[in-house]
Image (tube, rainbow, N blue to C red; front, top):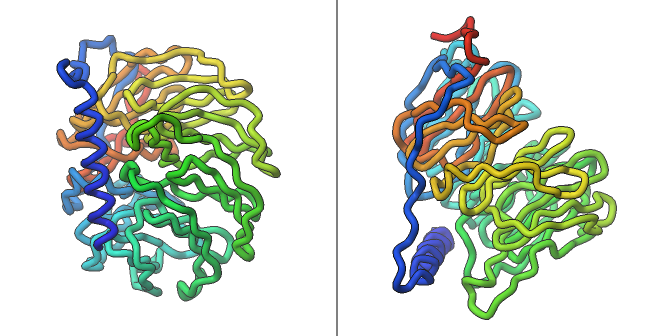
Length: 391
């Protein structure tokens, strides 16, 4: 818990320092919402109150969808499974653990991390606890189920491979953490037998999932500047892997495409993001640190469009929803953007609470969890159509 509190205080110091940089001039406020011409209908399908208000904690609690079931968790320890179509609960358990990351679902398990450094694995069908271990440091990245492992990334630079069966440690990799960092860590991702993970030093590594050997490391975000604030270079959003390529972005740094087999940087463009990005077959859709949404070509990083009317609204990373992107903001609004042009084509308010984590889109639905613990299912359709499953 001490390390968790320390990282939280460091985050506050960063915010205070960034505000101080403005000196005599006022800090620019969030953009006011302006009227839009709606080109998509947005209908609420159902909602569930989980509770566990975590408005100021910036936790990595985000729904997961698997085989028609939505799994979600709250900071006060409740974990639920509910039918994606109807919102009807399948099961609900109270773990009494301050959950902070997950859930991740796979291999019949639901895996979560906590602020106190616990990792829990529940039975996906019943919610019954399979195992629980302590790794001693807060988990702020979604766990990864990879083959016969659960891979955990902690706030103090540890990447650990745990047995899927009982949570026993198989291997661990440690990376040095700078004295000052943003609050948040990048979730590890799986690419074949490789685990790809980004770190607060601006480094990306590939680890052999079978034994924990580091196969390569690459500095994507080299810290720059004279002060600790200027040298922040965290990679806090997960990498994306497509074929033989790895795509990453960091804070006050670059967005880059790397070779999966070697870590060689094929191209890099100046960018700054701690929220992350989504991808399709052609493009990258990035929310930068100023809440400007940017579309870039995957092949070379060329900018296609920028949407800046939501600047400084604390946008989430985008999620792809049909031919649109959907992002949440600090006032609980969801905004749909046209993938081709960036135009805002729909808007919907939720419960008025911050949305820290990107929506999850699946089977034409968008699932959102606000920081106050409200789980909401929505469906968007082109204007003039109506969803058949709206309730």
